[in-house]
Image (cartoon, rainbow, N blue to C red):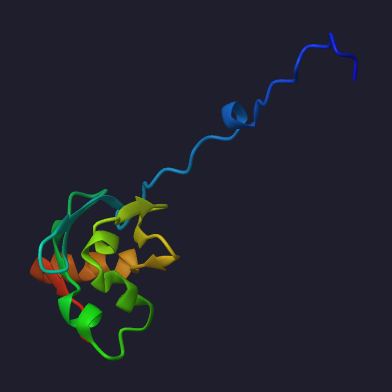
Length: 110
């Protein structure tokens, strides 16, 4: 390559649109709450509280044991319509959506 040649531009970001959550049971917003709970709102407007306190504290918590650290729990975000934490921890949005439509709360057992 010649030292005076113009740098090539990366057009991939322009050509590939970002993935957007658009299905009714895709999560739109999540807010961490005290006591290992989450406020969740879906694309279709369904909203409610998800209580992970029993799951996080359980001896059978598995990957959810990492969320016992309140700072780690607070790092929750939405990715591709799912509630997610670093380390590939996530919650099934379809199951959560159905529970919140029925009762406005989803309590994960230990």
